[in-house]
Length: 402
Ligand code: PMT
Image (cartoon, rainbow, N blue to C red; front, side):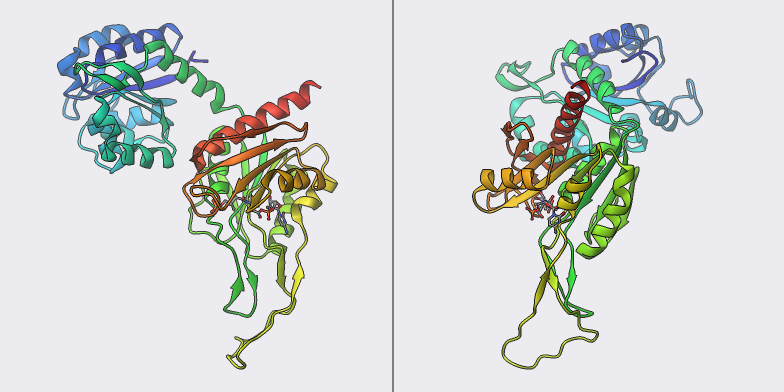
């Protein structure tokens, strides 16, 4: 996994900095090229010489030295990294990265990298649990940074609690797992739908729903990071297209249907997180409807069920539907799974706080074709996207084996 990979390791100033020496040693033994950047505070705990000897590479501590290997070193390192790891990451460094402060070699290089970044915090329990650190970690998680949770146990400050740097073997295990998963969807073509549709009433009004697109966009982003070729068919949302994803913007259910059906024959996996309107106004007025009588009636006609159409015509595609339920979740979910001929259905009870439309997190129960179901805890939509893609990959490899 690690042979030939370039890992840039940022070491911050904490007592756990000594454990980073073993992290470097293990990574090097596994065949990785490791470039170490130390903050000034880290150099108070362990000498740069130790890291230089273990890594066999120059160690970076300041922006202001003569270049060692390359002309603009922080940019060169930022570009060379296959993975950026910060271990131990202090509250100060986490705060700087989350808030766009680049005032030393490490924070500047992190800002310049497009490589995935794994942050491994280590600090006193109260500092770790403080609102500032937790908010900053959340910002980073939402931006796609990978976080490794600190361990609980005795701390250097004489107390015990969460905040210990995980053991070097566990950190290296996480790095190896990252490389294993990073390209796990390479060569796979994935279609994701996201956002709500708008069904026009007249030139200025529409019937819509509360979907923000966050769930579908998170899936598209994580799938692209795993190497999939991702097409994202999106209703109108206020989100930027994730990097490496081809976005097709649509407005109505009929436009979404056309775009989905056109892409369907060329993809391997479909994940339909969009909230498609079930009905649309039968007649769309050419001009803005004037205010007249005390009430008005709009006749609605049924939209095609895009997912059901895919289910009835699929030829090898793995089909994942979402279900937004307000009651009888399991009954409705299993009915949709069967009727729409899906391989997997992700059901959210949208009445729960922290679940469904617009929220940053989701709480879902996943239903599989073999009758098995799995309740997942509340997690960010990005974390959930990763878990759902893991499940899709596991299910697909089961199908391949049979
Ligand atoms: O976008 P967010 O704010 O992050 O919110 C996420 C979400 C709540 C929108 C998402 O988690 C979700 O549940 N999406 C599906 C919402 C929905 O339309 O559920 P449904 O039970 O009405 O539809 C079931 C499935 O059929 C869905 O995959 C839907 O895309 C599909 N469908 C529905 C109607 C239709 N005419 N065509 C369809 O393809």
